[in-house]
Length: 279
Image (cartoon, rainbow, N blue to C red; front, side):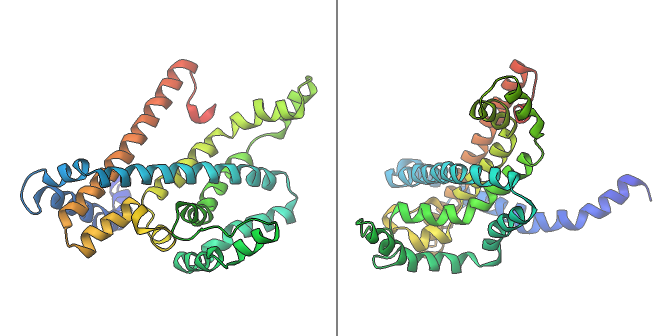
């Protein structure tokens, strides 16, 4: 058997699964967005012509961006600590990161409801310091807390994978030439860790855009994200065309952002002669 044919045989099962569970439903959703209830673009006119839909889209991207920034702020020092810790400490830190994957997302979201309620543990701890109680359930703050907790490992792991491959002798060389430790860290280590930052940010941001369970349980119906709007249109109102249009808009905006990122990377390559991921 020739190598290309052998490769094709190996790829076919995975390709069939991707077509069946991803490509076909996506194509069907796209078709419904322009054919239900009639063959036109009325559903897209409804998406962009309704102020509530535009607000939902902007809110979704805003929450996704905030989640990404918070995850990066928390994950970067944690991943750095993993790289400088000893073998036992590193193993313990990795286990802490992986523990959330052993628990159902819905169970974790329900746990946050208990922790964030008015008389929950979080408000009780804040009360010890004379603060609160704060309204954390049914607010964007509660949604952010829940989403950051769920998506934080997806930022930590790419960062650690890149940081662990950075030669510590480069920072040592900068310090030996007179650079302060902070200066060496900012000018040597941080630029070399940018591939991990970019990879983690993309993973967290893209997943945040389509989040449903956590915003549905911790958020307010009046401040819903686009996934909740799609669910309401399809499951509540049986408006399959409108739900498909909202999903298509989310997909197209996500692809547009990825395209802009690709253009930035290309421009960086032309200017510096290096790929943005290798800076």
